[in-house]
Image (cartoon, rainbow, N blue to C red):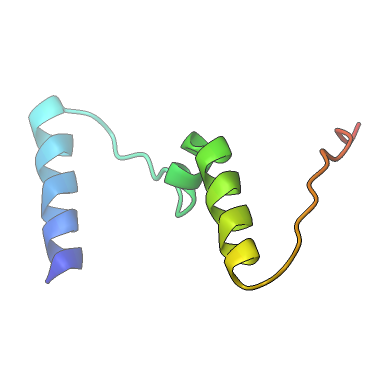
Length: 61
């Protein structure tokens, strides 16, 4: 039922705005809130009893 509702909302907005549909991807919200996602995952690992050390990876060329 929830998926059907989501599809109806998408169709409504596409038709109302006369816009083409653009799939944002399943990880859209994760990409929008990278810092919050990282903090949440670190906290979750720590609640599982793990010590977490984070360091940035160098950007690949």
